[in-house]
Length: 508
Image (cartoon, rainbow, N blue to C red; front, top):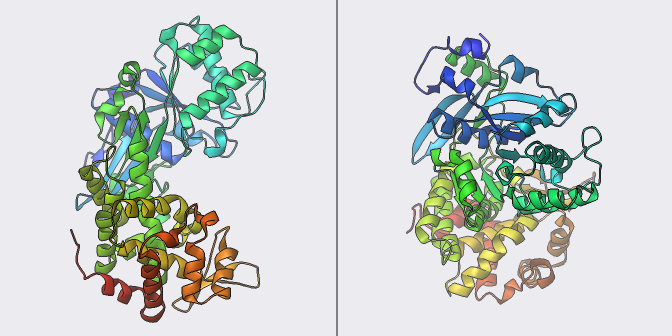
C-alpha cells in the first residue's frame, strides 16, 4: 500500500506511529516554502505539522521546487504526505517514532508552474515564507524578475512579493514574515538587503520599496538538527514492513531540534503561532545566545575532540562516546572548561549545562554514523573560529590551565602532521593506516613539523599571531601543557594520555 491521502485511513494504528486526522487536509495554505530538502522537511515542517495536529497554527505549506534535478512526482503520488522517523537519545531515553506529516499541500515546479506560484500571492491566508536554498542561494543577481521565471531565489521571492503588493494594493496587513534558514550569519538581514537592491534595479518605485521595507518582516534564524535524509535500503524495507505502507519520501531526523527565530515584533509572534507547539522553536529578540551555544559546545567540542578520536582509531562519534574514558573527557571538557568560558550576561550556567547534556545525547545517538574524518575537513579553520575564542575567554577569566583544551589542541597538531602522497594529497597516519587531510592549511602544518622538533614546532605555531589572530604562546602555561600532551600522545597514545589527565569518571 502506497502512502497517500486515500490510503492513510487504512493504516493500522500502532505505538510510535502518528497518523494525521482527515481534517488536517482541509487547512488553508499559509506558508510558501522555497526548497524540498530534508532539512526543511525535518525541521520547519516538523514544527508546523505538530502545531496543526495540536490545533495551534492551522495552516499548510506550498513548496516551490526550483532545481531541475528530480521532479514532483513522488509528492503528487503521495498527496504531499511523508514519514519523518525521529530516532535518537533524549534524557537517557531512546526515541524511535514515525510521524506521517500532512502539512504539505502542494509542490510546484518553478520552471513549469510559475503562474501557479505567483497566484499564491493573492491568497489572503498566505503569511509566511521559508527558504533553504544553500548559502549560495542568498546572493545578488541583476535580473528582470518580471520576464519569465527569475533565475535566483531572491529574484523569485521579489517577483512573488511584487505580485502580492499589487494584489492587496500595498496594504500593511499583506506583508509577509520571511524566514531564511540558510546557514549564514544574519541570513534575514542579508536577504532583505538583496531584495531592496534588486527592487531598485527593477525600478519598482518608491511606494513598493517602502512596502517591502516596512510591511514585511525579514527574520534572522538559526537551525540545528541532523537530518540524514533517506534511510538505508535495508532500513527502509524494514520500516515500511513494520508500518504497513510504502513511502518514497520517508526520511530520518535526530531527536534534538532547534529553530531560533530573531524578532521582537508582536505581529511576527502571532503569525508564527506554530512556535508555541514545541520548545525547540523559539522566537527571541536576539538569537546570538543560541548561535554561541551551538558554536562552542557542539561544534567546539567536535573540534577539540576530533583529532583525539581519529588518532585513537574511532571512526564515528557514536563509537567514541561508547568508550567510558572518552565520554568522560567530552563531558569534562564541556562542563569544566567550555561552559565557564561562555557563561555570563547572555548565557546562564544552567542553560549551558543543559545544552552540554543534550550534546552528549546527540553524540551517542545509536542511529547516526557521524564520521570523525568528515568533521576534520578544514580542521585548522574550525579550530581558529570555534576554539581560539574559547581559549582567550578562559584565560581572561581564570588562571588554571584547561587540560582538556590543551590535550585537544595537541591532538589537533598531531593529526595535522602529514606528508604529500603521490597524488599530491597531504596524508597523516594513525594505527598503521593513512588518512587524507582536507585542509587548505595542510602544507603550513606539514612544513612546521618538518622544520622543527616538537617543542619549537609548538612554540612556532602558537606564537603565529597572523594565523590565529592572537599570540597563543602568551596564554600562561598553555604552551607547556600542549607540549606535555603532545609528547604523551606520541609516546603513550590517546587513551593512556586521557587516563593520565583524568580518571574514568565524570568530574563536576
